[in-house]
Each structure stands twice: as C-alpha cells, then as structure tokens.
Image (tube, rainbow over the protein chains, first blue to last red):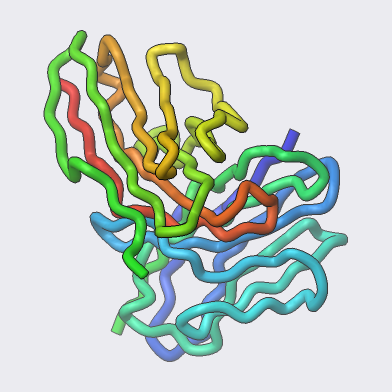
Length: 114
Length: 114
C-alpha cells in the first residue's frame, strides 16, 4: 500500500530565510511525487512534480524539491521565503507501477513572518 | 484556458437530505477526480472518472456516488447526508488518466450539513 507522511504540522520561517517542508513516502513500486499549495478558501494549486530523471525538481514560485530514493523523501525547498508563501502545503504520491489513486499527506502549514 | 469550475461554491443542507455537486473540467481534459477535505481526515480520494467510466474508487460508503457525462463534466451525489459529510469537496481534472498527469483543482464546494 502506498502512503505519504508530512511529519510537521507547522513550519515557521522568517522572511528571507531558506525554508524546507518535509515529506516522506512509501510505495511498492516507483513513485510519482507531487507538491501542491492551498491558499485560504482556495483549491489546490500545482507546484511541481517528480516523475523520473534529475533528483532536483524546479517548480512554480521559486520552489524546488529534492527526490531522495534511499531516504524515500521528497522535501520541498525555497532559498528565500516570502510572506506570500504562507499557506498549506500538501505532498502527494502515486505508485508508477499501478493505476493507483493519488494519496495526499496531511499537509504542513507554512508561516512566514516579516 | 478556463480552469476547473465547481458549482455551487457553498451549500447548506440538513441531515438526511441529498446533495449533487457539479464539476466542469478544463477544456480537453477527460479525467475527473473528486476529493473530500476535512480538518480531521485531510484530503481523501473519492473517485476518478475517465471517459464516463469510473476508474478508481476510494474508501467511502455507497452513499457517495458519481458520474461523468460525454462532455467530461462530472457530478457527485451524496445521499442521506450525515453531519460528518460537512467538508470541502474538490474536483480535479487532467487530460488523461495516466499516472504522470498533473491534476488541476477547482476552488471546491463547501458543504455544511446541519
């Protein structure tokens, strides 16, 4: 069975500092991995995805994520946080080897203080 | 291109009633998925449709049903509403049901069951 974990409910970062939002996953085969962001009273917006290839994936709004197969992680990163990055972030996984459904993590609330 | 649209945006129902939510995918997209988002359970997959056929189903009771029309628009129905059905219902579309396809989400329908 596939699963995804976001170990931190909340991450607090000062504006201008680097940020990391953690995600670990478990699938029986190879994973497709996604990051989505949700602003208040809005649906989810796609940030980036990992399919195959380079372990560092670049996405929207200056975000990037690093795929680490040995640690089964897909952490979201940004070199310099903005107050406008404050939102709820979801990691998601889909097993590449089957027509399985996408599974979302529990979400991490990112708060950027000025 | 217009994004994914969902109607209605807000809905108040009472226990025992039924409700139908509608989703219009991005033009050209043939796959539609539905998710339930609650503070307690997070984002949970409901079902996925492709070309009018249900391809995947989550772990929800039979009170939750859906369908997709020939124009790819989709509806989901919840019968005999319970208080616990209060949630944000999100619809997502993608151009195929392929595992690497990116899902684009609508703004959601917020359902309150009294």
